[in-house]
Image (cartoon, rainbow, N blue to C red):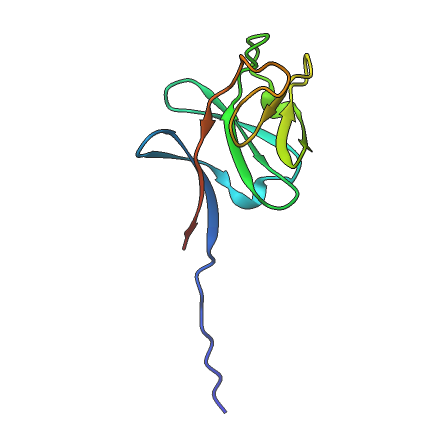
Length: 123
Protein backbone atom coordinates (compact mmCIF):
# COMPACT_ATOMS: atom_id res chain seq x y z
CA UNK A 1 0.00 0.00 0.00
CA UNK A 2 1.34 3.41 -0.98
CA UNK A 3 0.68 6.46 1.16
CA UNK A 4 0.75 9.89 -0.41
CA UNK A 5 1.89 12.78 1.73
CA UNK A 6 0.67 16.24 0.88
CA UNK A 7 2.93 19.08 1.85
CA UNK A 8 1.23 22.30 2.72
CA UNK A 9 2.73 25.72 3.09
CA UNK A 10 1.88 27.25 6.46
CA UNK A 11 -0.28 30.34 6.30
CA UNK A 12 0.61 33.32 8.46
CA UNK A 13 -1.54 36.33 9.13
CA UNK A 14 -0.04 39.75 9.57
CA UNK A 15 -1.46 42.93 10.99
CA UNK A 16 -1.15 46.04 8.84
CA UNK A 17 -2.06 49.68 9.49
CA UNK A 18 -2.60 52.56 7.09
CA UNK A 19 -0.87 55.72 8.35
CA UNK A 20 -1.48 57.41 4.99
CA UNK A 21 -4.55 56.72 2.82
CA UNK A 22 -3.73 54.03 0.25
CA UNK A 23 -0.52 52.95 1.99
CA UNK A 24 -0.26 49.91 4.28
CA UNK A 25 2.55 49.11 6.70
CA UNK A 26 3.09 45.64 8.16
CA UNK A 27 3.32 45.82 11.96
CA UNK A 28 3.71 42.19 13.08
CA UNK A 29 2.28 38.71 12.84
CA UNK A 30 -1.25 38.82 14.21
CA UNK A 31 -0.51 35.99 16.66
CA UNK A 32 2.06 38.18 18.43
CA UNK A 33 -0.64 40.53 19.75
CA UNK A 34 -1.78 39.73 23.27
CA UNK A 35 -5.40 40.66 24.03
CA UNK A 36 -5.59 43.60 26.41
CA UNK A 37 -2.01 44.74 25.75
CA UNK A 38 -0.55 47.18 23.28
CA UNK A 39 2.56 47.27 21.12
CA UNK A 40 4.32 50.25 19.61
CA UNK A 41 5.14 50.33 15.91
CA UNK A 42 7.54 52.74 14.21
CA UNK A 43 6.02 54.18 11.04
CA UNK A 44 8.04 55.06 7.91
CA UNK A 45 7.62 58.82 8.55
CA UNK A 46 9.07 58.54 12.10
CA UNK A 47 5.76 58.63 13.97
CA UNK A 48 4.72 55.80 16.26
CA UNK A 49 1.46 53.90 16.38
CA UNK A 50 0.01 52.09 19.39
CA UNK A 51 -1.63 48.84 18.28
CA UNK A 52 -4.09 46.90 20.43
CA UNK A 53 -6.18 43.74 20.33
CA UNK A 54 -9.10 43.64 22.72
CA UNK A 55 -10.36 40.50 24.42
CA UNK A 56 -13.00 39.99 21.71
CA UNK A 57 -10.29 39.89 19.02
CA UNK A 58 -10.81 43.34 17.45
CA UNK A 59 -7.68 45.30 16.60
CA UNK A 60 -7.10 49.05 16.79
CA UNK A 61 -4.29 51.46 15.98
CA UNK A 62 -3.92 55.01 17.30
CA UNK A 63 -1.08 57.51 17.60
CA UNK A 64 1.29 56.42 20.38
CA UNK A 65 1.97 60.01 21.50
CA UNK A 66 0.14 61.12 24.65
CA UNK A 67 -1.04 64.65 23.76
CA UNK A 68 -1.00 65.73 27.41
CA UNK A 69 2.68 64.92 28.03
CA UNK A 70 4.21 64.46 24.58
CA UNK A 71 5.58 61.05 25.60
CA UNK A 72 5.28 58.03 23.30
CA UNK A 73 3.51 55.83 25.86
CA UNK A 74 -0.09 55.04 24.87
CA UNK A 75 0.90 51.52 23.76
CA UNK A 76 1.70 50.82 27.44
CA UNK A 77 -1.69 52.01 28.66
CA UNK A 78 -4.49 50.03 30.24
CA UNK A 79 -7.18 48.77 27.85
CA UNK A 80 -10.80 48.85 29.00
CA UNK A 81 -14.28 49.92 27.99
CA UNK A 82 -16.71 52.61 29.09
CA UNK A 83 -20.35 52.51 28.01
CA UNK A 84 -19.41 49.82 25.49
CA UNK A 85 -16.63 51.93 23.93
CA UNK A 86 -13.10 50.46 23.91
CA UNK A 87 -10.42 52.79 25.27
CA UNK A 88 -6.82 52.93 26.40
CA UNK A 89 -5.89 54.91 29.51
CA UNK A 90 -2.55 56.70 29.34
CA UNK A 91 -0.07 55.19 31.80
CA UNK A 92 1.05 58.68 32.84
CA UNK A 93 -1.91 60.92 33.63
CA UNK A 94 -4.66 58.30 33.05
CA UNK A 95 -6.68 60.16 30.39
CA UNK A 96 -8.73 57.68 28.37
CA UNK A 97 -8.69 57.62 24.55
CA UNK A 98 -11.45 55.95 22.52
CA UNK A 99 -9.75 53.29 20.36
CA UNK A 100 -12.29 53.68 17.54
CA UNK A 101 -12.36 57.49 17.25
CA UNK A 102 -9.22 58.71 19.08
CA UNK A 103 -11.33 61.14 21.12
CA UNK A 104 -10.24 61.75 24.70
CA UNK A 105 -13.06 60.63 26.98
CA UNK A 106 -11.88 63.00 29.70
CA UNK A 107 -11.36 66.18 27.63
CA UNK A 108 -13.58 66.76 24.58
CA UNK A 109 -11.05 69.15 23.04
CA UNK A 110 -8.30 66.53 22.71
CA UNK A 111 -7.91 63.56 20.36
CA UNK A 112 -5.24 61.33 18.86
CA UNK A 113 -5.00 60.05 15.28
CA UNK A 114 -6.65 56.73 14.46
CA UNK A 115 -5.26 54.42 11.76
CA UNK A 116 -7.22 51.84 9.74
CA UNK A 117 -6.21 48.24 10.53
CA UNK A 118 -6.39 45.07 8.43
CA UNK A 119 -5.26 41.48 8.75
CA UNK A 120 -3.78 39.78 5.70
CA UNK A 121 -2.92 36.13 5.08
CA UNK A 122 0.34 35.03 3.46
CA UNK A 123 1.58 31.61 2.40
